[in-house]
Length: 254
Image 1 (cartoon, helix red, strand yellow):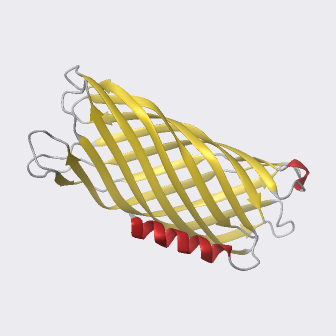
Image 2 (image 1 turned 90 degrees about the vertical axis):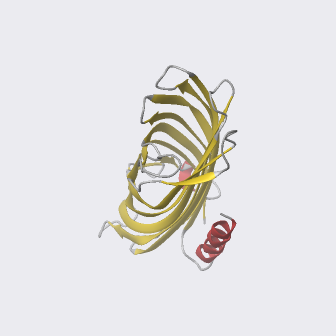
Image 3 (image 1 turned 180 degrees about the vertical axis):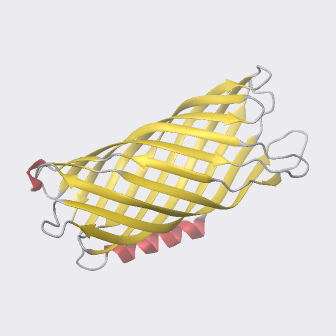
């Protein structure tokens, strides 16, 4: 994970060089997470975190973007047998993207669409504690290939809206099970499955002159799927996550 973060920081430095139009944003992301596991286990709860993003987005030019998310929350629920579950969950995501921004031929500042592809790393820790039947910690990690698009249209000089979509293709999914009182820490293979996310960003730029500062509100929906797979000494059970939430960011454009 440390090597990936170093690479991300180097990428951010690369993006910030030159005279291109850059957007830096820092904000809070909050979402309701619902976790469904094969066998009837169900959990849900609110997760809150910090989101950091840097993008080079210029009409009719190449695009580059990088983002980092770290979020934590508490999930509660029950097993398929009705036993109570309580856990602390943490999400960490680092992603870089490359693409090209296509703009309206007569008014490049009016609307755009940016198809992209990239690479990312995801880590999720779900740490169970009492009164859960087994106080185990599950750490799911994987690299992924991401493809998708960004888009936007300016309704006025102050307000714009977009629709973003991304699909993540898991690579080498793994789950480490630790803190089990009956076993040493073990690694289980996870079946690679498709994940996707929809975003609808609304951006407000006060008079377009307030030191390049903008405000963004972005509701989103995300689906995660960690596929079930046979393993030893346990099988990894198919697990799905449904996320609904939003992000509020302060953007600085220069």
